[in-house]
Length: 68
Image 1 (cartoon, helix red, strand yellow):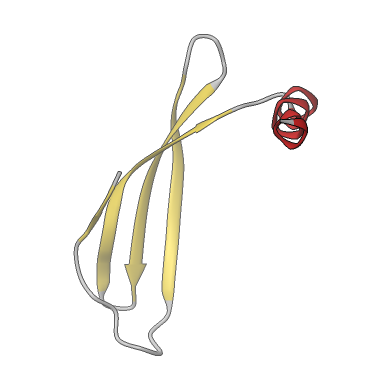
Image 2 (cartoon, rainbow, N blue to C red):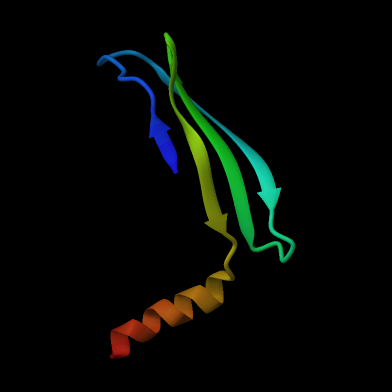
C-alpha cells in the first residue's frame, strides 16, 4: 500500500527506507513503514505487510500443484 508522490528523472539516485512497525501477536505477520526518496525529496510512502512462513511446508504445498 504505497502512494506515489513525485516522479524521478532518469539518472537521479533513489533511496528506499523501511522500518518494522508491528509484529502480529502470533509472530507471523510483519508490518513495515516504507518511504522512497530521490535526490530532491520524498517520491513515495506507505506500508507493506509480509507473512513469515515455514519454507518446507510452503514448498510442499506449492509442489503439490505439479501433481494435479
